[in-house]
Length: 403
Ligand code: CTP
Image 1 (cartoon, rainbow, N blue to C red):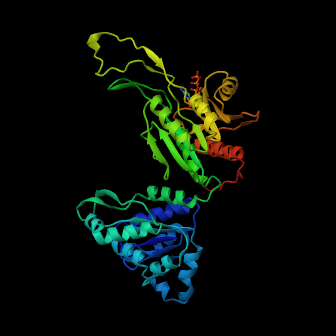
Image 2: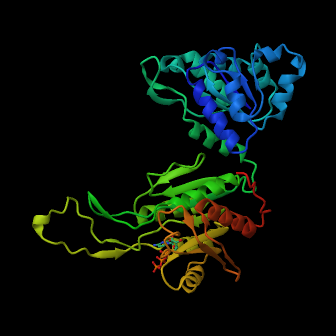
Image 3: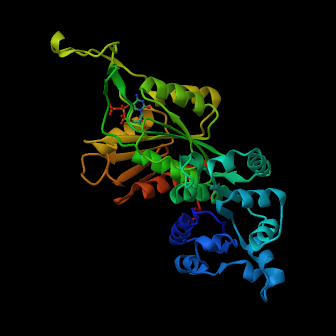
């Protein structure tokens, strides 16, 4: 259910409705009277293929049941854009229009995306309404800071449809088979400083790790994403812990793993770092430098030690990126690092491994099973990994194929 109120940002709600419909959602739209000044119900009907309602419907033939029906049928009520007036109405529980009465009748979670002038958003009355709604469990997305229609710069802009969509995805998946479980995922290649402007790293893009984080979120988990990546959109709902070096990643992983159910080490951890990072930029006048390297900690080995003491995480998954003897090397890492299973991937193939969006992997389990997967998107590989995690945890492995 999408509620649209009267803001200049209402046009973005049509894009949101369109993206939701494309993702397979059945979107019923309610426009407030002010919203119809900016955009028509026909726009929403065209992109969703379903009725869009206005206050005229409140007084129509279905009047006494429409809002109850809409409110009860909804899995989620999204109000985007939410004006200061609509926030006030939702906070006070006013039922003087179709959106107001439907919100009162709805029993589902509510997501609100405010859009208004920065001064109106900062007003104590609006802030009190936001606090009241938050206190009732309403989730907020935005507003973002930026240039506003009034010419002011500040928080008030409606979040981008893709951002709102991410929050919707998060809220709709909370009841999944990993609900109540914490999954720690690492992603990206570590960066080992040589001097203040240079570092040693590798070709890992972090895409496979981000996809695993998204798949775990889709299964209902709380996700801690420990990553070196800055160019990828963060999956909505993930708790992000940015790190740079292998040592920082080791510290973050060991701390998070102590209370986690699952650890998926998709990061490409540098085995070596410059023994001494220079304090100042190394200048070429000083001649060609010799770089002495020191060994980094093996994070999975450290996790294995901690796991023997704490019994957590229950499931530990490693990745093996290999160019030769894929299965033999992966099998030995599986055993040596005490993993539940390992995702072996041949990074010498052009369509698999680093930077590309597809991957070809074999899953190898500690108790002898293996699963060879065909070439597929990293998102699909991630879903297969999470399905396996569910199986190892002994949870029913059903996942909603649409999400
Ligand atoms: N890994 C780790 N700590 C390291 C190196 C790797 O925890 N210092 C993890 C990776 O995140 C991955 C798995 O171990 O899940 C295998 O990584 P890989 O680099 O293939 O293995 P290495 O043990 O480094 O072996 P080699 O580089 O010799 O192939």
